[in-house]
Structures are given as structure tokens and as C-alpha cells.
Image (cartoon, rainbow, N blue to C red; front, side, top):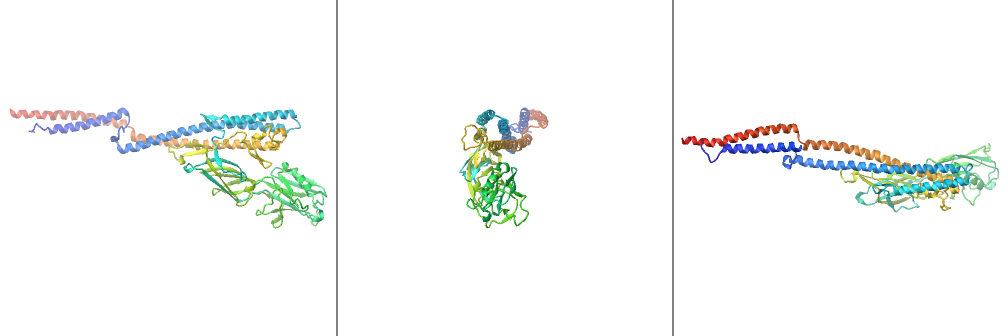
Length: 517
């Protein structure tokens, strides 16, 4: 080594020392922070995926919080509904007590009516005051809003869930494929010679979905009186009767079930009639499903009705498409549960009994929307409707062809609504209260199913995802202390060695002086 202006070994030693010191600083930083990725240069690709995972973790963690908040909302709502259910059960008990008119005075029934009024007011108060953090729960604020519902087509529409793609309204189209029918039988054989009268003492066993009754008429009884005798037992049997034609005394009698659907039926059997077939001219018929004997009060002709002898006939549920999906049906009620729409419709008799009849309406908005996933997309949101449980909206039941609600049980209502205890109309009142109890039970069941099958499963799924994402993030971001301490020791040794090498390299230049003697 004869040159002193440029010390190449010293430069090499300096370069190595700088590298070792940089590595030493990195190890010390990782050990001090516990993180392997403190800046982008540490691992550019790892930093990118790590930041994405961290973003997912924040979304998942917030989704868990949202689900827990939603569970709290549902629990608060159900607690209020449980109280409403207790009040309804107390109303039912008061109705049963008041119906015992032989053992209760008018004053006692009046006192029961006051208790019913108070309970109904309490139900409405609960509906208006049940809140969660300022959010009204049972006053209809969380219910869906609909428009364009035609009363002559749909008596009641209840939307349980709906998805609004693009934020626009959802159109609901209903198309009747097969009409609803009541069980119906036709009693004929009253020729002009009889003058439309029963020619011999006749006993009829009449049965329907409500119960069984016996009607006995003597010889010479007019068909009008027979019809009246049957209708006097309608609340006992669930069967009504009418003359085929009010102007023709020999037209015969039609027996109809009072409700529609496959669960309703009418059965008419003649007991102890003439043993001689020649004398037994009165026959009971039914028609095939292609023809429905009209309901009470309608005029029709038996000609071409495809009659066949029978003593029993069942009704038929309406069959309809809702937005192209075949709906589940029971009587006049349609139920649809699809991923984008869940609702229940009570069809009006005029629409349900008309083949190929159609109607439509729009679900314009509303509902309680819960964000349950880490991404703000429709697939990670769940919407549920919670209808108002105020007495004016609860217990909608058809009474005498009119939709009555729980509020009609209060005293002082108009005489056109016959459902108040003060008017001793216990049957209609019981129907309304039973409907209200069922609605509350179904609503609690839906909320319970939503909490159990949606919120809790979503929470468990997100917690599992949170654990796995955290583990993945830890592998990428967190420092391995065992590896880092080992690397630190190596860097320290190399730093000391590089320092010593640099000192030796700097000393080599001074050896040139020995050449000068």
C-alpha cells in the first residue's frame, strides 16, 4: 500500500459500518415498538396488505358493535311488547268474565269495561313512549311505508322486510291464479207442487269449522224459515244459509262456510229422512272446483254447475303470484318471504274470488336498517319492519265484513262497530283481541328470530373473522422478538468488528512514514 490520498480499505470499512449501524437501528426500533413494519421501506408489499387488513379489522370490529347495538334495540322492543301482551291477556280475561252474564251484574260488566278502556289506553301509551336512545320503537316510526294500496283489493298489508335497490320504491304486483272459495252445498228438490215448503219433518246436522248444530223443521216449514233457523246457529257452526233466489220459493237453499280457505268446510246431513227413495226428493249437492256456489245473498242458477251428491265440501285457499313468486296462502291471506321482500297481505274478498284479478302497490321506504358488515353494501345490511302497536293499528280483524281494531273495544264507540263489552258483543270482541294477541306474539317471534338467527350468528361470524384477520395482521406487522434479538446481537458484533476494521484501515496509511527512514 503506497498511496495515502485514497484509503480504499477505510472506505470499505466505513461502508460496512454504515450498513451494520443501519441494521442495528432497525433492530432496535423493532424491539422498541414491537412492530416489524414501522415504515414503508421495511416491507412495501407487506405494508400494502397489512393496511388493507387493518381497514377490514376496523370495519369488522364496528360491525360487531353494530350487531350488539341492534340486539339491545331488539331486546328493548321485545320487553315493551311483552308488557303489551300481558295487557292483552288481561283484556281477554275481562272479556271471558264479562261473558258470564248469568253470574255478573251490569255494574260489574261496566267496571270490566272501564278496565278494558284503561288497558287499551296503556297499550297506546307504551306504543308512543317505547324508545331507545331517542329512537321510537313501537309507534310506527320503524314500519315500512306503502302507497297505492286499494282498499277494494287489499284489506291489510304488512311489510316485514324489503330491500330498496338504488334507493327507489319497490313495486308489489299481485296476480290471482286460482280464486279463494268457501265450502258450499246446495239443497234442492223443492218443486212447484210443494210451494217451496218442507214436505216432511226434517232434521239436519250442520257442521262447520266452528262447531256442530242441529236444525229441525216440521212439515210445511218454508225455505225462508229453514234459512233463518240455520243462520241462528251461524256463530255455533260457522255455516250460513240463503235462498238461491228470493223470488223463487222452489229454488233451494245454499249453505256456505263463513270463512275462506282449505281449513274451512261445510257439512249438511239429513237425519231420519224418508226411507222410500221415491219420497226422498230433497238432495244435497256440491260442485267441482271449477265452479263456486256464490256466497250468501248472491243469485245464481244451478244449471251447468256440475253438481254431484255430497254432504261435505271444503273451501280453497287463494293462489296468487306476488312479483312473480308463488305466495304461501291461507284463506284470503298471502305470505311472501324472499331475500328482497317479506310481507303478508290480507286480500279483499272481491279480489281473491276473481280469477286473473290483479292489483299493485309500492313500498316506498321505512323500516329499521341495520349495518351488520364491514362494507356499506346492500348485501351486508338487514332491514326489518316494526309496525305500530297502538290500539288503532292492532288486532285488525274482519267483523261483519268490516276491519275492526283493538280501539273499537273502548266504550263510547259508534254503534256501527259492534265489538264493545258494554254492548255485550263478546264474540266479536274476542275475535279482535285474539287477533291482537296473535299479532304481538308473531311480532315478538319475528324479532326473536331476527336476533337469534341474524344478529347472533352475524356477531359470531364477525368475531371469527376478527380473530383470523388479527392473526394475519400480526404475522405481517408484529416483530418476532426472538428473531430480532438474535439479529440485534449479530448487528452489535458486526458493528464492533467494523469499527475495529476501520481503525486498522486508518492506521495503515501511517505505515508509509517508515519508507522515509
